[in-house]
Length: 219
Image (cartoon, rainbow, N blue to C red):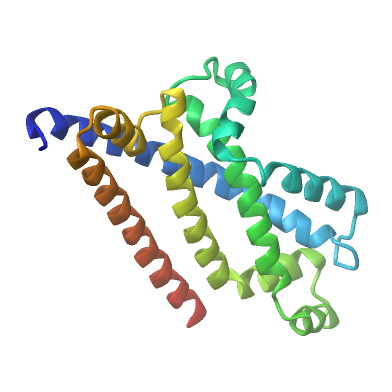
């Protein structure tokens, strides 16, 4: 049984907190992840800007961070969040570990999609006298834009999952609502309500991502 007079404002606030965490994480993590992925691709052995130091350092960082469960990663990054924004609790504090984790995940996804570009296309561009920067940004990135959109959509869903864990440090959001007001107060209807809103949010993101990817692939 849902008391809408109480749950209505709470649902609105929780949805706003989730959207705040997810949108800011996708903007920051998407940007830094794109840079990491491009550097990984360009500096890998035999590629246009090969650099063993840069490639191995980035590769090592990603391989160390990615396997850490996010619930543990939040605690691990707590001191860094405190020094960066002055607190390790709340919605803003949750965005720090979410952005760091999203950056390394997106970086790997970007690298994998860029590696998938036909080497023949790159060689043809190089043979025509294109600079390394033009090959990287006008050829490789342009060729992989469709798969990259799908990759970012996949990460968006993962970031929504991260936001549900953010309740552990008082980040609020729909996940926190489901646990605090649903599970802990034995109000199963509230848990279902939070889950339905999360599912709808993810479905909407997937629909938009698929549409954008189709437009990019058939341009």
